[in-house]
Image (spheres, rainbow, N blue to C red):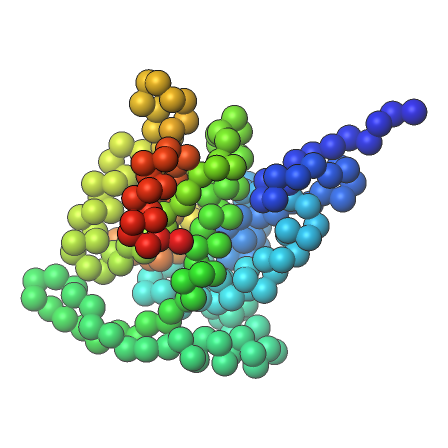
Length: 237
């Protein structure tokens, strides 16, 4: 009698029978218009996958409000976000509670007051740890991230200093994308010559328009003790 085949969940890192494993898309597949090919996923157990269902929908709704002229973003907002908010008053209340208006530096001394929709910091951290682990599983399958600490940053590309940091960061990294104007990402794993796969650097850009404006995040992760110590000192989660 054959032994059941086992697979490891990329989130909890436990092994399960293949029959109970699922494909967990990260970024969530709900951010893509229908028919987008080669969406990225990793194998996850049912409980881990289901635990992100509400977060996936709220993340999509939040992303679809970013300042970008992406056609995919507009399609998602018109066909997914609006309908989900009409059906679920709890989601609508959550978004309304995080709406604000703030000053944004457009460069050249021009300041504009624009609407902003926030997203809870703890859920942002959890979402981008999950996305990064999924990307690592796909592109660097031998990388062991089980002991890594993750530092997530929000890059406001409307502001000149953030845009300068963006171009500096992505310069040495490999670029890839999924969907014409849905998800662009830059990736790289740092190797210091002594410790393989010492750290990873990622820049994740959602719903970019022709000017590369959209929701942009940087992720740095490492299992090096010095990196972890600096995170604790800075108070990062």
